[in-house]
Length: 398
Image 1 (tube, rainbow, N blue to C red):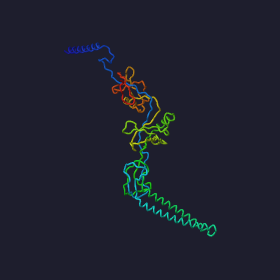
Image 2: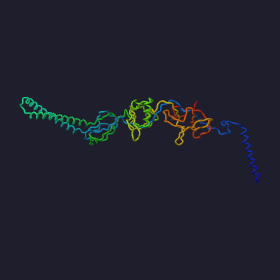
Image 3: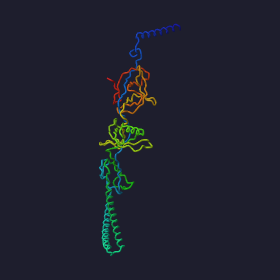
């Protein structure tokens, strides 16, 4: 019974094997792509990298600062009598912002004027006395001692008059300082002290009353590394880039909610030394800000010219693979086999494509889709596409 079972089983296997060989013979030879009896090659899209002349741009992060900022403090002490502005409004240079109680200062001015009048009267008397002894001294009718005394009295009276005049000027100036004026035009902050409070003035510890910032134009500060500084200097010396300190190079800025660099500025300042702690150097760009969109303290990114015009190979970021510290792309090799190419990356260009410094040629056919399904050595079926400059997307050739 066991032998008969094995015989039936073996005869069934033999029959199945025969059927398989018969089907294979009926299908005949094929190329592997159109043969339904074999595994179909994976379809992928390929594209040549973008190869054109470009100018590279470097990007830096920074913040906006007011082109002018003033802390408004009183120059005399006293009781704050009046706040003469609305918090947050634009103010003009010379506009009265605060008024300090003027009564003590008016009294001081009146006293100074009275002292000055007394000094003038004393001076008049001294001049008359000196005039008399001077005429007598020529005839010898007055002693030398008396002549010297009258002369000294005149000099003392003249000095006293000058001092009294200075005291009048000082009292008048103090009275003027009771009207605290805006030193610049700009946007005023809120008032820090309410009416009726006693404030200090005229010293380093004077009471802060408010602040004013000028934001048109506005400054944008950012820092670059020592290596960047050296690169720019060498490019300028070779005539491939303008001199940063003298040629007002263009700078383009984008805000945190923007996708493009919409705001044009000019580089107007490069610091005179590299910071020994951070190894960076400070730069400043200036832009008009006529619509007052930009405010001090805002964050932004700056882009400026980082190279001369040169040929470059560029590819989309989304086709670049990572293997630890290596970057690679898949390309189509001989006999439609997938090959892996290690590449050295540069910065992202303004057209949205990544610059490739090394590892690719303009004729390499890059695989742009199904990247998770392919491996080096795999045979694929390729359809040609184009990489569109100005976008990171890929579009099939029509």
